[in-house]
Amino acid sequence: MDLLATTSAAAVSSYALLSTIYKSVQALYAQPAIDSSLDDLGQAEVVLPAVDVIVPCFNEDPNTLAECLESIASQDYAGKIQVYVVDDGSANRDVVAPVHQIYASDPRFSFILLASNVGKRKAQIAAIRSSSGDLVLNVDSDTILAADVVTKLVLKMHDPAIGAAMGQLIASNRNQTWLTRLIDMEYWLACNEERAAQARFGAVMCCCGPCAMYRRSALTMLLDQYEAQFFRGKPSDFGEDRHLTILMLKAGFRTEYVPDAIAATVVPHSLRPYLRQQLRWARSTFRDTFLAWRLLPELDGYLTLDVIGQNLGPLLLAISSLAALAQLLIDGSIPWWTGLTIAAMTMVRCSVAALRARELRFIGFSLHTPINIFLLLPLKAYALCTLSNSDWLSRKVTDVPAEEEKQRVILHPNAGRGAAGVGVAPAPIRTAPLSQPPSSLAATESVSGRDRSTVYK
Image (cartoon, rainbow, N blue to C red):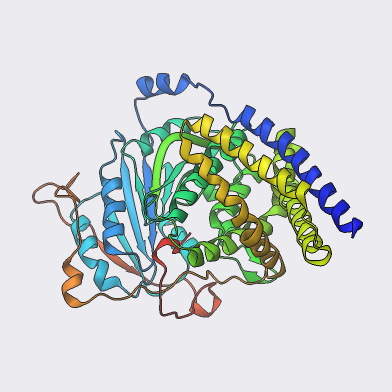
């Protein structure tokens, strides 16, 4: 039994050492840098680039979609914006039709109705190939943008070496449950620690799907590779944001993070959809890890530490936890060193986060540690063993409301009127045919239920 105790103590000590080094360096590089050139650019820019905003939708709640489109219509960007709403063969198309009609009279909006469900990636590509703006902003249909998001992302993209930039994500339903509060803190840490530190070297490893801007010239180069991603001979549909970001880095472009471009997105409010989402994200991360490893020799040494910390750290934590659990069950002895070390590391990290965010609520993020050990680590092990599975797990059909509920679409009084004047012809609502037979697409299965908070994420 000494072997179990020694293994657990050695693994958790190695985990603590690696985490201390990794998180300390990460916190150093995550400190915000002042870029005064952006203010100067805003004053000097005469011709602002045209921006195409692409919103793929699949069985979205009409009120959620309405809030998303309203936030896009209300952007304060002085340049040209065109919005492409792509309905990816939704089963509730009649329910969201009133939302489409509200914005059909706005010349900035176009609606593409795909004949059947082809998946988020192909829905995005359909709009990218139908548009022509200098920059492309991908927005999830359950995401609300602050009024200055487009402006701030465009200012960051002024450097032609930058291929992509993402904004800061927060949970729009943060106060709904204990889990949404936890996820909101998790998003803050992911954005303002991990992405912020990576951005110091122009190499954000994943420009997250809810709000990410891309340079069209770079997208054009990479679109065929992006569309034709396969894993073990099967089309890979999910994890599109991470894969596209890695392709940008492989092509030599920088990827950036803009902390003051705020986007609020709906997050899972209960454990089941949250774990489904995490399983899909874990598979996506593992699939693209090899591509990321091949990039490291060309990037700053910190990025190597970052990849090691994110992959070796959880492995050491899992080994120490398993050995400690075996020690408890077999020998009956309490693994004090392992437990105290993990507790100490948790409290230090949460305290530092509370100081950096200036919010005491981050002390509560300590709850994430048992969730990580007992749920997420086993989930990642399962993901690693089932990498060939390409099921979205959450792409289900919404419950169709009663007839009287179909009219209860709550919109701001000015929704859809931002650029639509009297006598302006309605924007076209197009039905787009499939570019290839459904049998060759990644996601064509029929399903009968829907988790609102994890569709297309």
